[in-house]
Length: 221
Image (tube, rainbow, N blue to C red):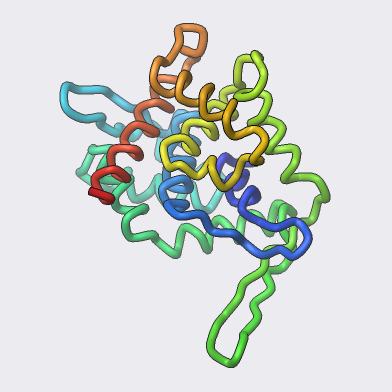
């Protein structure tokens, strides 16, 4: 399951299928897709003095519609600024990305057919029924192992933790009883970037999360 799909699942109520859309969630999805492209070696990041640059590495399709959509945009653009791509798909969310993400999740059997309901003939409500009981808890446990225990986070968990920390969405997605310990561990992971965590992509994960935090802070100023 993609990082973006995992974050999407975390916002869904398992019983009702309703989506609790956290503030700044579009930044999480954008960051998750960019990190996924890094994992697949489709793009690379280069840290320069004042900014981080995105370099296309492989334009061949990934097989996922949402990833391929962004990859094509990056490959066909002259802009190399990581900040530009985060702004482009976060400040003004591209509904096409969400549509493609939902479509892929249906094809993969993560969610069933999307249910759209109209209330009072005006308001539309969309539900995303999950197909597998406990799938949300499995994702939460993966994250929990990386921030509550002394276990070193997996690459995927580190990416999810960094994205949640950068956008403050951990306050909505992590259980209340775990939040104090989670905040302490996330701050340590994000701020210090311990040598033990410098896996192949951890620096790139940090750059994406840091740029998202900068963008969010600038928008709130």
